[in-house]
Image (cartoon, protein in one colour):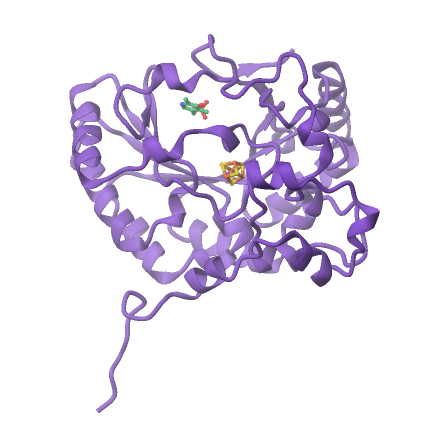
Length: 335
Ligand SMILES: *Cc1c(COP(=O)(O)O)cnc(C)c1O
Ligand code: SF4
């Protein structure tokens, strides 16, 4: 007799790829055929926030190029050890808007639910690199208080699963969470902020599509791509599956010095995203988190890039340039 196994019986392909992620700097450089002595690596930075990158993302890097724009997003380097004025551990003071573990309620109609304590990839510029995920790990009791908080706060119409990376959870867990949220009458929309499909396109599997299709509430996906080289046919195929559910897929990027801080790259990124069915949403200026100062592009420079984009491409391919701030209850447009 032949057994028919569903995804939940076997370990799904994306989970295998997740556990096969590269966590050794030297192994990564060996795969890329780059001599470590040509780079300013930092063991201290790596210990503070360790290298982590799945192989499908490594495969999009160019062999032999120490300045590869995807490599620069994950490599722990000496510049991270610099203490720069204005760069802090919790630049957004999210600790102040944390009413229940796992929940950040800073904007009026929408809350962030920290849907996982880890990410599939550790991005060096990330403001969550110092976030106390351990204290915000969601257990079943916390889920109860989260659901209770959202139920009591009728001004909320949208719940955003954020991270860590919410899609690092398995589909069974996500399915349960989504159905609990679906039962809250005043909610109108759900959103999932994720970088997982970008680094492991196989994450968009049939089990995921099933719970997305079952949701009463529309689920908008906001992926996170910074450079056109991150968009390949595997990502495009994954996005086509998501789009086929009838939901919206948007992208947010961070403007990063030496990675995407020129108009040609940003336009190419918007074009490739559009071809994959993804619309540009936000272009964030860097959150001023300790260890990321070498990535900063000034607001004046960023504005010039946006102007170049407006001159040279279609209006809907130009993302909104925004800054997040501890005081302002929305993403502040930069003008
Ligand atoms: C970014 C963010 C949101 C979502 O903002 P939108 O402008 O709706 O995309 C919600 N809450 C917090 C705390 C955020 O940082
Ligand atoms: S939260 Fe997003 S940007 Fe930050 S490390 Fe995770 S995937 Fe990267």
